[in-house]
Image (tube, rainbow, N blue to C red; front, side, top):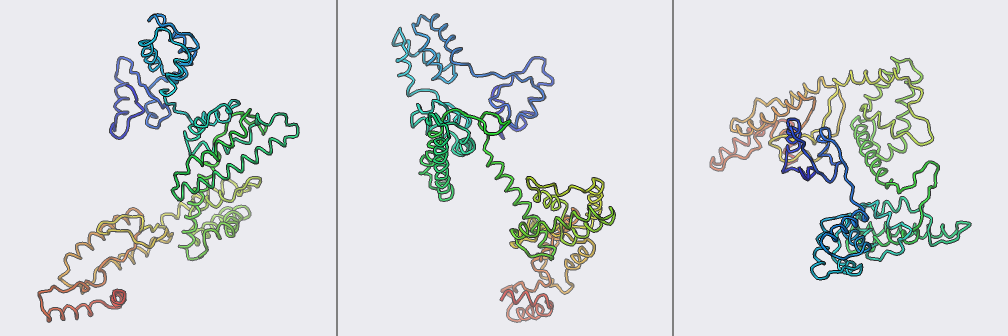
Length: 484
């Protein structure tokens, strides 16, 4: 089974069927893949013996090609065969085909012949970002042509600049020569840092304003110039650091920042729905988070367990703070070099707090009507109904009273009644799942707003208008004002 890592949506169930075949097969099944770390093969790996094959070196390929050339009566030296193996990038089939093609026109193959033949028809190499950075920063990187440097930097235009920015300071430039006080190296590092900053400005123009014609110029300033200034030998700067290129730390920091923004937005929404705070997200983070943390942790340290848990749960309910928000406040209050905010709180007290909060969670319900799709409604409400923690009892009764149809409804609106009943059944099913949705039903309160049929005449229209005025009440009056 070749290319098992290429199973996609068109081969749905293919991996499971292959595993079932492996279980009952009496002969070995060989599964070949290019990426053994693919998520599609996670289950298949439990039923396979892993055998890794490496790409042959140019010396191994040259030895095999020499044996083939002698068997075919072709005269070629070992240096030429090593060049052929290197240009083929480990592809033995391509090397044999090139050797056979050249033997048709010449009996003696030299190094220059192979170099000229493969200069324009060499195999495309799939270079990883780490390999590209190693070549750009290598000791012999100064011998690379400009087109080769551009190809290396454009192999992954997003990741290669990040790797260079993460590791350029670790390299001792070979162009600095004898540098006893390190001033030449510092000068080159400053020039590289300035070039990386220029590349970041260009990258903003490319991404934000779609100026894709600046791509090569961006790779020049963010990759080629810093590598050309600092290429040489790599050294460690901290004790215990491994002497190889580190992965870009910006990606992890950016992911953490995005996660913290989402968690802070949830906390902000909950505080707003409690009606105890109307502060913005930035103000909560800068000014209020420390106070909230103090109110949520200090009672657990100083008060008896039962009293402390009751105090904290009451405070959380008053501000609509969930246990996820509690963890968010604690996590965002951790700073390097400062003690953990939960130090001094006994594990038994933490467990009691969780149990007490979860015990009262059955009396709380989350309103998220904008996140629930309801039939007969084309769009969700434009104004977001935020998550609100409130007692369940009483609110459902009020909802049932609001959803009870009026006895004064017009008998001509059977279609609206059917639609309303369908919506009410959907709402009841949502309530059974502990999701409370409050919506103003279209046409509730009075169905007389519907226009009278055109063929009834003036008398019928007047009768419909009078019944509409009589059946609306106070709620319908406000609706008519909005329509005007």
